[in-house]
Length: 94
Image 1 (cartoon, rainbow, N blue to C red):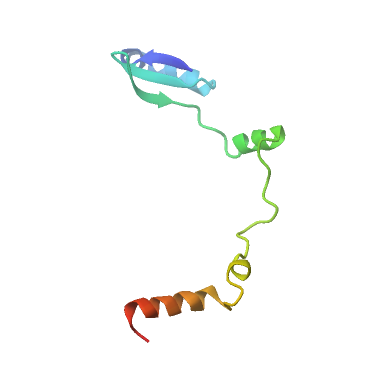
Image 2 (image 1 turned 180 degrees about the horizontal axis):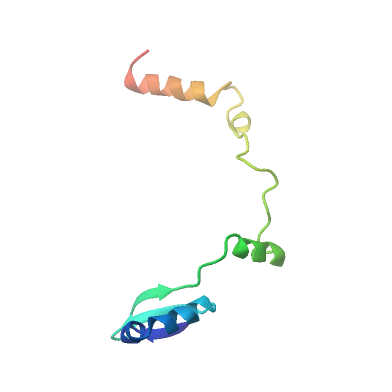
């Protein structure tokens, strides 16, 4: 990570942006205090691909959300019905 003073960014923005495009993260300071961070934009999926290849993350076993209702509430046929019943009870309407 590099640090650049705000006046340098104002004087020569294309050079600073070129360094960010080259993969350098730059912290811009104003009178020695950090005011913003410029980071390279990751290509779509590139970071995830690198993490998968390195074994840092694993892909999901299946797509979508697992059906948890049968495990959590075995006596309930439908979560929708349970929600409707609960809302009627709260509002006092039937």
